[in-house]
Length: 246
Image (cartoon, rainbow, N blue to C red; front, side):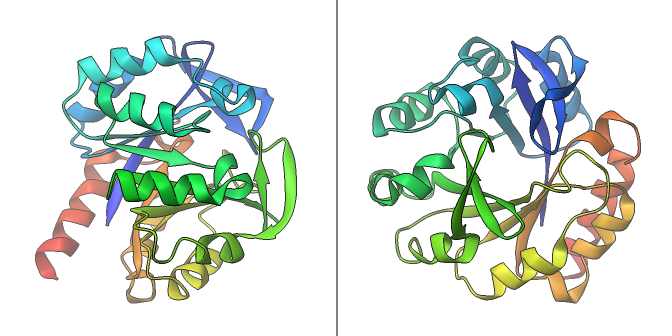
């Protein structure tokens, strides 16, 4: 189980949104590279980054901030937001991104995901962000009529590294992960599933380490870290102890 600290980028700054609403953004750090270094110093092993402006624009917007982070830390980085074609996938991987996350294009162009995953095995993840069970696209501005499971099933044999499942209704609100829906999704797939949206406290870490969640590959945590509601040392110690006991 991997705990991914999140850095969401808007106007080159590190922010957190509430329920994906760009008008409800809180700036937590003016220097995303410094924030990445802080997470590395706390002992996190894998960084989750989203180019929020890119998700709305359909192309990378915060490239300078991402590149600064890549130069600042040696831990692997997964990146989403505005990745809508194979050239962008290839460019980010060449710059040092470990894994790209394809969201909107996974709904609109599933063949792109399959082609990218075949071309770059283990380096392509799919981001499925759901509002009342239906997947939202274009930076969550539009909601489709397709369920997360329907989309995920298309990629079962495509070589996709992970499905990142976000409950939009909880995102940034510190209400706790929607583990019921995430576990239900994971149990119907062979692709590893990462939980996202609403991570609130050490109780979420404990829930992720419970036997019923053992199919989950990890979870993404954002606001709870920035607000100081989650002690990184305590969370990572629980995870290390669980790994050692496994």
